[in-house]
Length: 234
Image: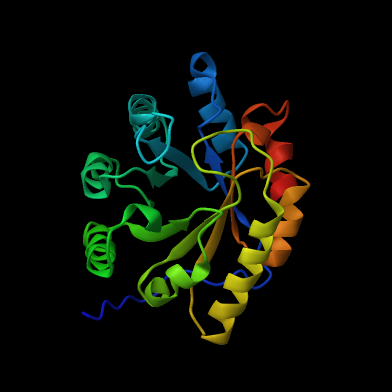
């Protein structure tokens, strides 16, 4: 296997507040721009773009997420955290490179073999983005251990991919704990991101388990005070 090396430019959580990635999945289109401004003013760290193709998951958000990414590119300098829930990973990477995303994450379940995974990792890095691999609730962390030294983050889905406003699946918190223990034992410098059912209550449990990037959608976008909601998550 070709060795892909990188110099991490970020630190482990180590007492820092968690970073917040605001999902647009529950965004009300008619209030989208105002909500984007409020999220940025509330000091979220990323805008989370949930790209769904209607094949890997049932929902199709291809057009709306492209519109949101385009809007963000005109009104904000905040980094995009692109989460690809798609079968044709390479095609969608190419679609989003024009927005210079900070993070591009793809699902291990959408890949066919180890070579494809490594090729995607290299392609994303070569195009200047950090690389994430996402795992669905039913997927074991054993499936991604071999890739951890080559990527920047693991996205642990704490709900079933493809739907918004779901409750967190308790067993996925155990998965975060297992992942955190493994990366510490093997001295791997990597972020753990969680996505699904994150609010001011569940945030504490996933942070204690080891997550340091929290994706939150409806809890933020439907909040009467987004700044307070962000502070509660951090």
